[in-house]
Image (cartoon, rainbow, N blue to C red):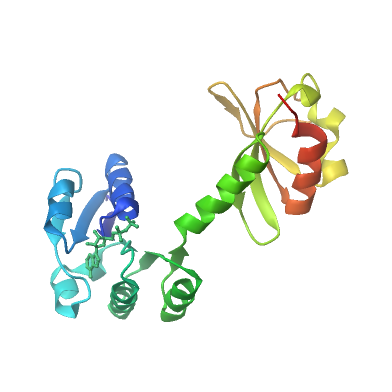
Length: 222
Ligand code: ADP
């Protein structure tokens, strides 16, 4: 059976979640207080309704507790976001993901029982900062305060060299998880895999180790 999602708040973030879920073939109920927004998503989502989710009876009449996953993407109105989340928790929704506007908002959402709190602007800011500091860092995903996954573009320093030859694991304590070359992706590269300039290397490790490795092997000028 198809999973059923509800997205509350159809701003830039909620709207993009709604579109992407629909494109992936999921059943999506799109909800907003703004009628124009709801009309915009009527042809994209499975259903789209005008509703104020801070009203308990409205949520009940939508049968919100039957959805597998509810995303709260109410932006600036932090009070509405908190109240909506609280009622979703009270009604026993299985998975609740909420977008936080700031660290305090995030703390409150976690305390009242949101299962996942996302902070897209902050996270994207961190990723972009890593990307602009070093042009070889294509993408960056923080796993914890200490560990990350990064995508690095192979330059001349590593061209024609093997993973074992570069001694990445022993020297830097990092693991190469995958290598992307053109459209191909090798998800379990062997030690004798030869790197080529332009390959995208996906590495997992401690930030300080990744940073050392990046400086030695990937930080190149044009
Ligand atoms: P973003 O930063 O993702 O663009 P916005 O703040 O622009 O977010 O959008 C949030 C959306 O949430 C708006 O379309 C707004 O109408 C909707 N919204 C705000 N409060 C409620 C509510 N109580 N119930 C349903 N939708 C709401």
